[in-house]
Length: 430
Image (cartoon, rainbow, N blue to C red):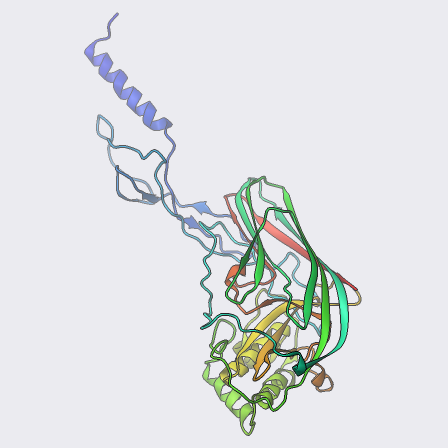
């Protein structure tokens, strides 16, 4: 039986409604960051932005209100669906349980977790260098090698997808130990798993970068980097410490408030009557040990030079921040070093990981100073402008963009209803 005109119209309207109801909502919203220390995933807002030959504009958070025309909305959906760009935000966290240690060594700046983000961060540093990296050391006649140690170093990192749903993507970067003559030489290195790419930053730091797609809930990703590293104790001939200083590593940045009036005034006071850069550096190096009380802080990135000077407390990160801030305020280029130290008793969180300083000495380049291990007056000379054969450099620079402002490694994940955390261990043996 042929349908009547009325029933045909009703059938057509029903078909339009069913077709529309069965189409997925192709809306890209701006994720909302869950602001907590555990790096929870994000859930898109109800609203978003559509683009294409159809509707142009922004969908209200509560959706559009009103009556649909009898014939339905008309328009063409792009073949690839409507496209948009979600926002991004980073959430940092310290390793589960915090970083433990005893006074005397200090902590790292902690690893980082992040909530989902639309893309890998671009290399826009918090602090912009005016030139590229400068050679660290010059002629062999300027130093003497006192002793040499060979270490087996194994870094093990486990990422846990502890959420109940899959992570759509995980990006993980691991900072790699470099060769820096004459203080250290990597003679062997093995990175697992394979399939990484090597990337570098403005300081010349090197990283292994991994990317994983659709990581199921409950799955662990295990990374190991094994090294053989020759580390030398080096004593430098500072000479008369005269010559030009480069125009780099002099500005203020996060945690290193070199332009703060109180820090500038203090640097000027400490440098008064000092004729050479080395004499000024000795005053800036000694000041944290003379003025701060060592207090291990298991928080993520430290409190910075200014807060440490005000509270008169800190650990290796603050001791280094203070020396760097004073040196820069006094016109001497200096930068943070993040690395690991050999501990005869084995790995100790907060002790194996360590921060110290490189400052520029005219005629030599960047030379090592450890204001934390040299904070006691009896140890000052041992850690002033020399290396001791038990410090292994990993990265140079504070607030490194490739590590999201953290240290050692950095990871991001994309997805909802998931959570990624990390455990790290260093095993360093002779």
